[in-house]
Amino acid sequence: MLQLSSQIEVAVSFVREKWPTVPHAAIILGSGLGGLTEEVSVEASFEYSEIPHFPQVSALGHRGLLVCGTLDEIPVIAFQGRFHLYEGHDAQRASLPVRLAHGLGAEVLMVSNAAGGVNPGFQVGDVMLIDDQINLMFDNPLIGINDERLGPRFPDMSAPYDSELMQTAIEIARRENFVLHQGVYIAMLGPTYETRAEYRMVKQLGADAVGMSTVPEVLVARHAGMRVLGLSTITNVCSPDALGETSGDEVIAAAGTAAGKLTTIVRGVLASL
Image 1 (cartoon, rainbow, N blue to C red):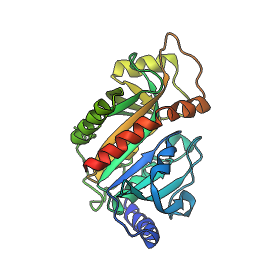
Image 2 (image 1 turned 60 degrees about the vertical axis):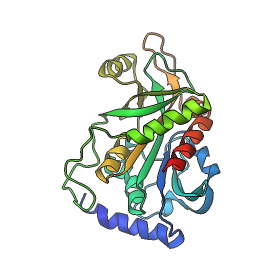
Image 3 (image 1 turned 135 degrees about the horizontal axis):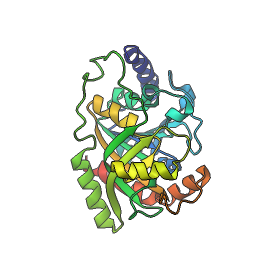
C-alpha cells in the first residue's frame, strides 16, 4: 500500500491539468448503467488507458471512461465502468477509482452495480438500496502495510453506508412513487454466476442480492472517510429451486430498465448535499 500515495498523486495531477474543479461527489457506474453520464454536462473526459496507473477494463458493458463535469450544476466525476477481481486485478487495484476520487476532493461516493436478487420479493428491474455488505471475495484492498496518509489501519465498518444519504434516497423513491428495496449485498469473486447451492448459501448468510464488485470500493471509501451510497439493480432473480440460465448480455439489458430510477435517486441525493 505504501506505493499508492505517489501513484494517486500522479493520477490526480493528470486529471487536474484538464479539470481543476473539486467534485462534490464521485459516481461509479456498473454493468449496463453507464447511461447516466449522458446527463452530465461534460467539461473533460479521460479514457482509463490515459490515466496514470489505471489498468484497462475488459468487463462486458464497461466503457472505461472517466467523465468530469456538472450534474444539475453540481460538480461531479463519473466512472463509466469499473475494475473487477475476476479480470485479474487485486482488490487494491480494483479500488483505484475511489482513491483518485478522494484525491480530487470528493467527499461522497455513489456506487451502483448489477446484481442477482436473492430475496424472493425482488423482481428484475427493481433497485435495492445497499444498507450493509458481506465480503466473500477473499481479498481486501487494505491488506499490507498501512499508509496513514490514506486512512487508519483499522477503519470502522459498523455502518459502511451513510444513513442520511440512504434516508434521502428512500424519500426520493416515495415521492417519485417507485419501489426501492433495502438489503444486504454480498460480493463473490466470479466470473461464474452462482450455482444453486451457492445461492442457498448466500441466502442463509443473510444476503438480499449478490454480485461481483462494489465491496472493495466501499472498503477504500470508508478507509478514506468518504460517505457512501450504494445501489444495486436487480438484473436476474436467483431462485435455487427454479434457476434459469443467465448471460452477461441479459444482465446488461436488464440493468438498463432501471436507469431512470437510478438517475432520479442520484440527482435527488446530489441536490441534498
